[in-house]
Image (cartoon, rainbow, N blue to C red; front, side, top):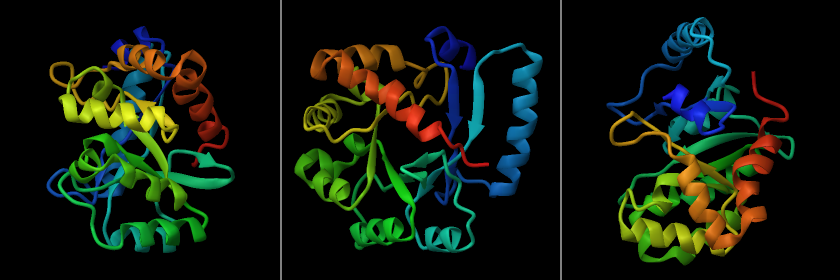
Length: 217
């Protein structure tokens, strides 16, 4: 997958395994250990792509503990605040989610909402995303959502979010070479048609560069 990403022109790839979402999550120390071994393999294979480890953190009380222990896996900084990828259940928005986002921003932490276009409540009412953005949440849309991989409802929600100027990042969110391969270039082409080249470039280049200007250790 890294070779395919590299051919698409991607120079930096964040690996974001699930955290706090059984049965997919592993203990963070184990993920770190596996990542170090994986990074050595990347170097040994001569790949030029740069890899970093973060996580897609599922919403839950453990987030409060991670923040208080300064142990939240982050993927850079936004306006001086550490930023992390926040995942919600696909079928519902848990009670208190917006309050959690407000609390996080008061703690100096910026959540990045992962694939909101795939969440049923936001597909039904895309206007609900505004409350997340107003609370200080950044937004990341999956490129494959724009190419029809996840169906018409997902595409339509992604289109609405993009054209409303509510999206900060466009990500590959690749999982494998068969059903979820890297496809950032194709999604970027659709985004360019929808919002123009300058705005689309901001989602895959300018904003990620801002995030990475001070990468969390």
